[in-house]
Length: 138
Image (cartoon, rainbow, N blue to C red):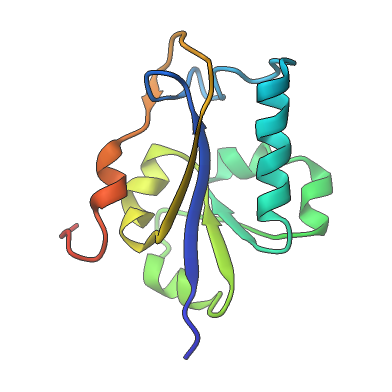
């Protein structure tokens, strides 16, 4: 049976910031590095699967639904069964800490961009996600 390739692509601030008040702390920043990061996300995920929590999926622009498979993850969904549904595909897991706490053990590739943001946050990147592979008990 074909394997599902599970990846994460995300951006963090200088101190690992991920979110603030329910959005990216740099949301709407027109500086070139932020605009390039958003464009890169949509380029890399094109043609693949994006699975994320409801808030993240709600923030995805309508154009993105045309060239990638997008599904909302719910807490009752079994990660292994959900990923098996996309066997042979590349699946990007989005949604931040609550989702990555569950799916990190399945991720084979983390693509993390460090942006020049160094302001407040209430969500942070957990470096343990990078090492929790199949060997860590959940």
